[in-house]
Length: 403
Ligand SMILES: Cc1cc2nc3c(=O)[nH]c(=O)nc-3n(C[C@H](O)[C@H](O)[C@H](O)COP(=O)(O)OP(=O)(O)OC[C@H]3O[C@@H](n4cnc5c(N)ncnc54)[C@H](O)[C@@H]3O)c2cc1C
Image (cartoon, rainbow, N blue to C red; front, side, top):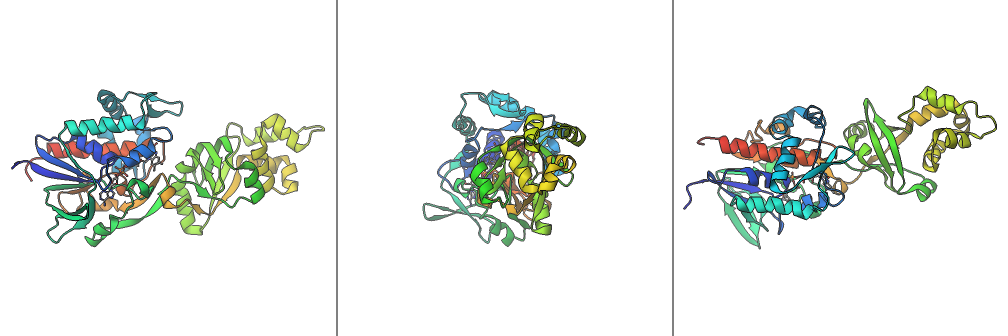
């Protein structure tokens, strides 16, 4: 029988796979238990619409994208975006930086190829994979309970690392059902809420019939003191896109306070309000709509938004019109359902773990990845944090001595 210490990794997503690649298997017997027939289903889903693995910005700026920033700082500094790109390159996944500074696998490398790189590394590292193992909690001796093929299995392990994911896209296996087991142990969890998701807006039928699927390009969204430039897509449900996702934290807070939230759209972020007003004046025989088309290059969607927000008098007054072009108010009535969100907040409360993600109430039990209550916008930040947590914890466990 092996004299090596056992590590059970429960959940086989992004953070778990990096952990399994980096753990020292001359020191530990490592097994991954995953409920699905295969690892990394959410990783494949994430790769579907452009596989944004990380972001290339300076680490000091990258750190500010996380809420709360301080919680993830040690692991992001220990394994930053450049380290991750180097790691991927060495593993056979060269990456490139897109125009948005986001990092993608080089052309021709599909999400399944990236997943296979992880799986090959895991196999090479002699980590055992146990698919179709659904974790059901602990028994009275704190052993892990699994269901496999209708059989109940008990696993005794020296170290357990939970990497069970958040609660969106349940079809990938990450359904947040694990939270009750932690609650039963007295570990505080927060309810899951949508993040990186669409916002609900009550568009009128005429507007949506004409503009569903169209985008406001190069606009800036604002709420409180936060703003984000980017693209906003108009949908039947409301609005979505990178600029929307980046502000979801603020929107969520306002929704909790007021049951609605106010976003402002700057349709011309590159122009000052005075410049817009100047261009709207002196229009001679031109109608205001012609002037908006000719001198501000506004399209039908932008015009429709302005017309449905302003009274006729306000629309024909260059001062109020310029103000609305810079601050078009949009009332948000809710967030998309959790299952449709790209990620969730909620899960294990951060003050339940120490700086190495070990549960304070359960020694040698760790939690990593989206199952902890941190948040970040899309742009590669989510995966970077998950991979950094896996890498960081593996290194810490590799360095650990004795019990
Ligand atoms: C549509 C979509 C697009 C995305 N795009 C991007 C992107 O471009 N860039 C980016 O950075 N991020 C993206 N993300 C987010 C990113 O994929 C996740 O944040 C990341 O995968 C979370 O990793 P994790 O290891 O915490 O959990 P997951 O990858 O969710 O893995 C958790 C694993 O635990 C397993 N599990 C759960 N419960 C049990 C149980 N009881 N027993 C056994 N196993 C269990 C699940 O089956 C799952 O395999 C996207 C997400 C979605 C849904």
